[in-house]
Amino acid sequence: MSPDSTLGVPEGDLLHSRVASDAGETLAAALDTELTGYAVFEPQGSLLGGGDDATVVTFEAGVPVLAYDATTDCGGPDALDALDAAGPYRVELFELAAADLQVVHRDETHRVPPARPADRLSTDPELAERTRAAAPDHRRADERSSVEAFLADADRIEELKREARREAQSRAEEWGLTGQLEE
Amino acid sequence: MVEAFAVASGKGGTGKTTSTLALGMALSERYDVTVIDADTGMANLLFHTGLDDADVTLHDLLVEGCDASVDDAVYDRFGMSVVPCGTSLEAFEAADPARLREVVAELAADTDVLLLDSPAALGSKSAVLPVVLADRVVVVLQPTVPSLSDGLKVQEYARSYGTETAGVLFNRVRDDEDTERIAEQAARYFGGTTLASVPESDAVRAARRAGKPLLAHAPTDPAADAFHEAASNLDVRDGDAAGVADRFKSAVLPDRV
Image 1 (cartoon, rainbow over the protein chains, first blue to last red):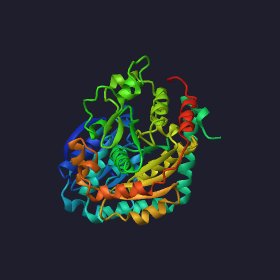
Image 2: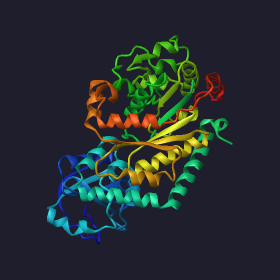
Image 3: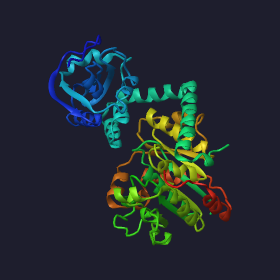
């Protein structure tokens, strides 16, 4: 599958194509081989239903740079939500020359903090740490600015807390723990 | 009994077990400390304390009709009382999480500070029980968005059960991460105090390989210093021993679901 997008990621050389239940395996493979290129994740739903949902993650020396929906071009950390718990996936991994991605990787709207894909998609908590350690300094700055932007958004955090309290209440009913809830 | 803390994080990889044991060892200089591996589905405290071959673990105590006494699962290690949990899936499946309440009540009667190493999840009754039972929670964070967001979620779950936040601990912090600024911003949303910012350290992995808590394996490492600072910033409250034990005993938990 091509990395279809108006971003202009060129088609790379296919390294492998397989069905994987854990997207983290692909991220780990990219990191361990210091891949420059991209991975296309196609959730199982679209394999069965013939849909064309696909999420692309690009890499520079094994470290994720961009993430986007190949159909809509929507990108950044939100693009990873589509992959949350959506496995298994058809995963295709492609290699490109660093120069082919240089311009594309300047795009900031589709960029993700280096360890965010591993944090969200891998079952191995150490993978995020390994990715963070492998990221160059200028990429770690992406992480810092995303943390600061997150903490500066008081409304978003209040909503997150409200949602957690709603969830806690409803799970308490499910688990028979309502007697323990604070009035 | 003084106080029971759940050490929680919401997501894996933040170094929760390392933090629990480090806080426990540092607090054991002032208090009688008991550490319990309440992560019954993914136990690993035993590997950090050289108890891989422990005969009796928390799992045994959570099985109905088991004849082991609570004392059988308590091991004196590194100046603390350590209650490890086993790693077998069968034992986990046979265990009744609601029995944790009785075990905690019994242990609470004989100790000053109880630390519950809690699961890095909120998706099941056994995962949420430590924050239900504890007096307060210590949230272990990394300065990343997923960790902060999951930490807030744990805090709100705990608050729903009347368990307030004693403090937050930033762990595995890299040199270039400005946690002072992040901690200042995060303090607007988290309760309690910022206990410390613990640097990422190779000594943590080495300690784990040696089957020892960090403070025993590398007591002069900068990460160990930071955990000492965290323990001294934790204001352990005086509780009424009998009252706390009674509270655990009277917690009305249903049978397994």
